[in-house]
Amino acid sequence: WSALAQTKTIKPNEPCKHIVLYYHDILFNGTNVANATSAKAANATKLGDFNFGMLVVFDDPITEDHHLLSPPIARAQGFYFYDMKDTYNAWFAYTLLFNSSEHKGTLNIMGADMMGEETRDLSVVGGTGDFFMARGIATFRTDTFQALL
Amino acid sequence: WSALAQTKTIKPNEPCKHIVLYYHDILFNGTNVANATSAKAANATKLGDFNFGMLVVFDDPITEDHHLLSPPIARAQGFYFYDMKDTYNAWFAYTLLFNSSEHKGTLNIMGADMMGEETRDLSVVGGTGDFFMARGIATFRTDTFQALL
Amino acid sequence: WSALAQTKTIKPNEPCKHIVLYYHDILFNGTNVANATSAKAANATKLGDFNFGMLVVFDDPITEDHHLLSPPIARAQGFYFYDMKDTYNAWFAYTLLFNSSEHKGTLNIMGADMMGEETRDLSVVGGTGDFFMARGIATFRTDTFQALL
Image (cartoon, rainbow over all chains, first blue to last red; front, side):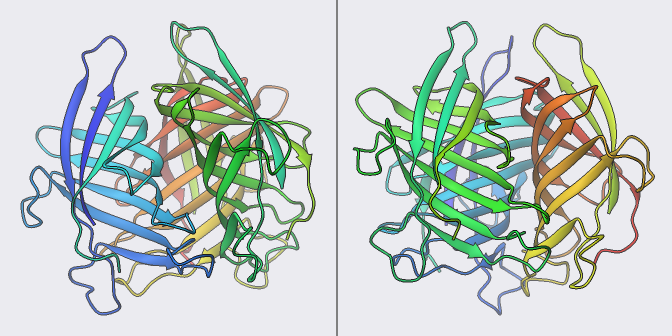
């Protein structure tokens, strides 16, 4: 997927911060080492037809617009897996790593990605560096989606 | 397992909220697609005799009483794995998804499940929707337990 | 690895707490059941040469100094995986379990471990027992490192 994620982080005694980010994910297919940003660590089980149990580890570039080739302002490192037997649905835990002139530090995020909903809220559960003690919400919205596998 | 989990969430400037929930988990055995709510994504290793490293992805119905067939008021989506070589012990990360007239939103939970203890506390690390910015404790207590595998 | 982790937890309305801990990790190689503290739950993929996707479950003793045989004051239970194709880099989620006269309770931690940096900050996202509602930072610093596999 290539997803738009809208991150709202709220710090005590500070105004809310709001960042819009674009994720770019290309799954390793066995030959695309140069382009791939993620790979299957565990195969899907036979529970249903929607990849239940398939576990993907990723290291995705993050840009400020939806162009894959724009300069990345962060990386998203973590994993997701599919976890419904009657539709595509995923669960994520990952870190956003910022290392730009604007932001240095990380945001740690986890939660369910109910892929059938137009927007899905995950939790920002912590942060480091510029994002020390951050908490809040990361809202996923799918921008373009080229292929599941 | 079918476990009783007691969730205490504490919001800043609001009184504590306390919810009692029952989880129902049925592991996929290769043929019970209709009933199974979880499946092995990675097999146990040979480190000890207690399934060390076995990883299970789940999508479990949650009820307000301990009857499996009561109407679910939420789902628990996430994973656990076994991680001790000399006894059964597990580690969980998952999302409680509420979509009822009473509650809409999610709670994100992680922590160790020291299965030998009568009650075990995990952390509620975040929430969304009605549970925005929630934090607190999820206490596991095993209600009935029919078979490990 | 055998890593030094420095844990800073900050509780609302309380002074900061600061704990220095040493992790001792010995990966299961198929025969060292007695000594091993961790095992591969999923093998590395072929995306790059740095174990991308390799998933390790651990139950590591934690000591107050860097001697492996010092009495453990806690355990670290959780998992990590490698997630970069052009260098070693890992992502962790785990629980520190304290059960000593000094501390009883858990700290839950997640985040990226950018192994190339001298120190790396992960998030303390929650706690239980003596660490109820704890939040903060866990700083990793590699002390000694004997072999990756």
